Structures are given as C-alpha cells and as structure tokens.
Length: 155
Image (cartoon, rainbow, N blue to C red; front, side, top):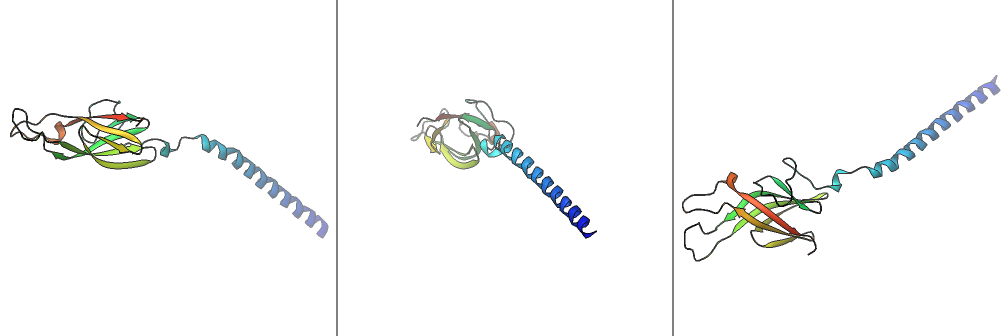
C-alpha cells in the first residue's frame, strides 16, 4: 500500500509541474505582446480635451499641436505691457505668456515672449502671435486672448 501512495503522490507532483510549466509558457507568450502596446508615455500629455490643429489660434488652457509629438498650452498671461492701439509710446512693450509644453512622457512650463523663439528639449518654439491688441483704458480680458505658436524642429 505505501508503494501505491508513493506512486500516486509522484503523479500528483508531475501534474502540478505540468500545470506550472503550461502557466509559465502562457505568460512568456503573452509578455512580448505587451511590448507592442502603446504606452501612455509614448504620447504628449494633454489636458482639457483634444489638441487643436497646428497653426490654430487658441485661447488660455486650450492645447494646440506643434508637431513632432509636442503640444503647447497657454496657461496664463504673465505680462502684457504692449503699447495700446492709437497711443504713441516710447517702448512697444511685450507679451509674456506662461506656456506648458508637453512631449512624450514629459511636461515643461516656460514663460514665452511673443516674437522670440525658445529652445525646449531641442525644438525651437515661438509664441508667434497674441491677439487682440490692447486699447487705451480697455483691458483685455483673459478669455479674449488668442495665441498662435510656431515650431522649428530642425533647429
């Protein structure tokens, strides 16, 4: 009787080994498929809905594609010292916009001066245009601003 028990015990052990082997084989077959999946870190991080098309004038907090997996989002007006329309000024002034740049798995916030390019991770990004122009004694409301960005990836 003990021999039968030993044989039965050995058979159960072989079944367990066979099941474990099949389980590991199945896992090894599935793991490479995960390498083909798109990981969220492969694309720019985008908040506040889909990004507008390249070259589109956007409002505050509206993301816009810059190309090459980059997205820009104007977050705040840091400074608007532009000379109002119809006023003669000594200095033309400038607009500085706090802009968030999103790339594949990273995010960076920079203050961009309109008309000046800024290198962000190898891409020359420019806040090309800010509208509307200010008028004397009429402040521009935050919701009225529109921003147009340009990019030179080759730089």
